[in-house]
Length: 252
Ligand code: NAD
Image (cartoon, rainbow, N blue to C red; front, side, top):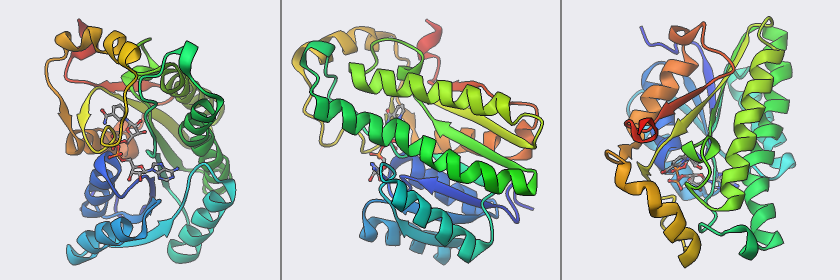
C-alpha cells in the first residue's frame, strides 16, 4: 500500500530536478500526478516514465506566473482525477545572485511572479477544493535562501522569505479545516536550476562566502522523500513550518 494511494497530487515545475523526482516518487506511492511545467516535450517524458512504471499521470502546460494557466491546470486536474489532494509548489527560478544596486525591475518582477505569485495563485485555487473535502496538503519548495540572507541575490532571497510567510499564514489559517501547509528549505541540490545562470560577480562572491561550510550537495530524490513525508499522513501533526533539508549546512 502506497503512502499516497487514492490521492491526486499536483506538482509544478515537474519536468526537471526536484519536481520531476517528486512526481515520480508520488506516482510510485500510488498518487495520480499532474505534471505541470513550461515545456511539453519534457512534460511528456516525465509522464511516460510514470505510466511505463504503472502509475497515473497527466501532463499540463502551465506557466505558474500566469493566473489563467494556473486556473486551466486546476480545471484539467479536477476534470481528469476529480480533485486535488496535494499541491506541491515547486516551480522556481534563480536570480543570478544579483545584489540590490544592480537588480532591474524586470528581474525582480520575473522572480516574484514565478517564485511568489505562482504559489499564491495555486494555493488560492487549491484551498477552496480542500475546504470542500475537509482535507488537503500543500508543500511549498522554499530554500535556505528563505531563511538566511545571502544564499542567492536579493530578489530570490526576498521571494523565498515570502514563500515562508505564505506557508505559515496558510498553515495556521486552515489548521482546523483539515488542511496542512508546510515548506521545505533545501540547501544546494544537484538539479538544472543553475544551468543558464549568468552570475553577477560581486553577488556571487558574497553568496559563495558560506559555501565552505556546506557538507555536501543534495540529490533531487532526497528532497522528494522529504516532500513525501510532508504530503503523507506520516506528518499529520506537522503544520505551518519549514523543514530544512540541507545535509547540516545551516547547522554550522
Ligand atoms: P530545475 O531548474 O531543475 O527545475 C525547475 C523546473 O521548474 C523546471 O522544469 C522549469 O521548467 C520549471 N519552471 C520554471 N519556471 C516555471 C514557470 N514559470 N512555470 C512552470 N514551471 C516553471 O530546478 P530545481 O532546483 O529542481 O528547482 C525546484 C525548486 O527548488 C525551485 O523552487 C527552487 O527555487 C528550489 N530550490 C532549489 C535549490 C537547488 O540548489 N537546486 C535549492 C533550494 C531551493
